[in-house]
Image (tube, rainbow, N blue to C red; front, side, top):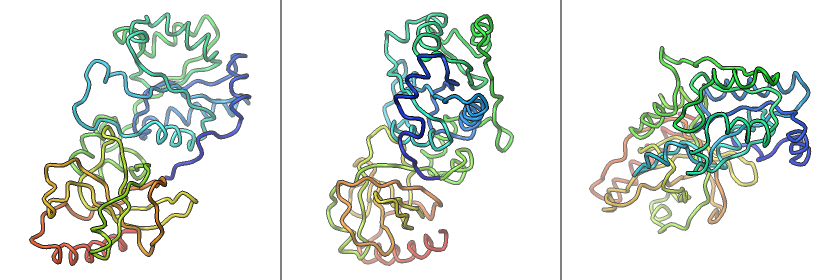
Length: 315
């Protein structure tokens, strides 16, 4: 799955007008990862909007509310803001609104949140949420309360059942743990698409060129989870072209960088253009091996040749 445009039809102006008239189908959730469970919610909202002939709108948070109370010391996000918006709209949802979750919003009761946001700000005609949706101060509101608040106002609330895979409910938490452990296959299965990172390219130190494998160095924020290892990847270029490649995510132990911040370096097959400052979308297709230390750069170069062969076969 590739990233789509940040806004589909209708226009932003038309969407705002529809919201003021109380004519949107509203999907609500954090949607970190936009995984199989999230996709069921968003596709339901899109389908209901099409049936009614009105726009669909997804409400989400720029950062998960849990981080206000339990901040993470390391990477904690499956999708950055622009990645999430594009993935959501790629499912047919017309617009996305992100809230910044802070102390003021955290103090709102469930009833006040419903009144101020669901009714006044968004003017929902129908609502779609997951079975475990929570809202309001101390997470006091749930999907059943939402349905209770909507009923007297003629606002149906569609509660989407858990989506299971391998006998367990799909969740962002499980996917985070899988990716942190480098278990790409399991994470991709739960996501329903190949995990991706969309980021600008930073200038590197030129080692890849000297080894015969020039790389684009992704400048990803610290909060973005990147799976460690060597991977076969698909790369979407700024002009829309898609290329195969391989990526190393790690600390480059052969160069003695083991104490540094993990970095993602992408070698694009049969490609020599300068990409510094441009944004790439990299989809992680298959893990080839763990990152490891080699006794010399020549041994590293030989291994990269084998890795490239394996990546091409995987793609």
